Image (cartoon, rainbow, N blue to C red; front, side, top):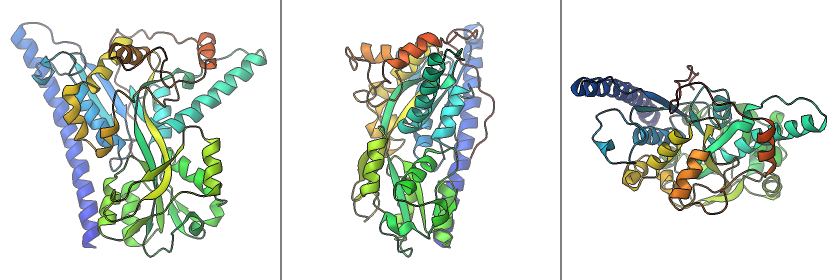
Length: 403
């Protein structure tokens, strides 16, 4: 019970601290802007609100998103932002938002309920491929094609590899995927990339919902239920190491189950953005290396986002002067590099991001990771109108539910 209190109290304290920090940042930004305007005897610069939908506060997306928000925010009067290119444009206020995960994030971007979002490349690919297939079928049948918002997704950057974790209690008797039959397994909340990937794995090894007892817990909830003995295993797709998994491993109460075998090989052949991966030995205390599935995390934005704004935001994230700040957010952030930021994206780069990578010398004649050229043909059929909002601004999104 003391171990449970340690983990849950730490998670609760961290969530409260993050919420308080965001409130203080927002208040400080407004105060700095007002003070600077009064001192200069002129009207305060316009605020540009930019949101980043992430994931569970216990995962990897949220701390990385918080670092991005801190890096690109540029309240008036900020001393850190006096160097050109180190922050976003003056007046930019960025905030990381917790969410259910990749599936939900893709929807939030396409619906205009967030300025940008992190999502798994395979989830993005599935959504866009379905929309692309429908547009082709409509065109072939001579049906008038309505603008499909999924075809307006663009990448700001490809970020880092995520690994699918299958965490099992040491007393569960689970050492391989076949052992999941008859067990109590959490596959995360609907709307998360983990949920989608876990279902793919279970199907790949021939397990139906009726063969296991499923629950739909987020990472914090799964950690708690694991300690209570209420579940035998849970899936989690995230950049390693994950804090809660590390805490369980340090208590010697869990093991990592390898995700491999003939069924997984067939799954990899069918899913172009999933790759064979490995969680290295020592990532979690004394746990050995295990085979797994990897996918790249992608930073998404809408096609109609202002190109200059996107350019300046991406430039700030990859500014050498922000490297320490980025690396401090999470170990997975070490893989967020401009050299790989144009690789493995399932949608074309946003023009503003593409311009930055070309200027910085990280993009040559090609355009990095994009969909096939048919995407461009669909773009020509389904043009995106430029919003009427003032140039360089993204309106604050409507409130979204938090996990």
